[in-house]
Length: 132
Image (cartoon, rainbow, N blue to C red):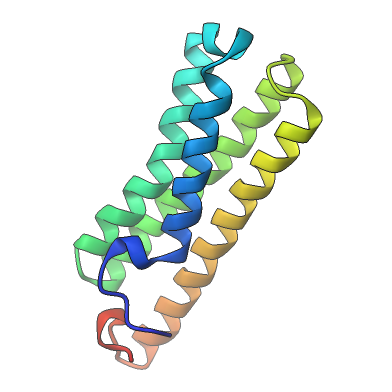
């Protein structure tokens, strides 16, 4: 794995940022924008993914990073569940739901892959910032 110097270099963070941008876009229009509870919840959950990745990275330890990544992955599950609520309420059409669910799944899978990499690295006694 290439050396990661900044959290902005993490693919999972990039995907989470894209997801958050899209969640904000779809939740600012129509009836979705008027459901303040759901709008706030899904926005906070999507932002939580990228925020937890960033915070964990800045802590500079594999164990803490894995813990924050687990929280980020949990937030991805929360976003997926909220997307179903938005679909069922008619705030999203099926195409919007599919696109957002795909972004959410991609972020979750990238986080999971990064977590596995960190676990394997720590078993070998390496830290992610020292890998070349």
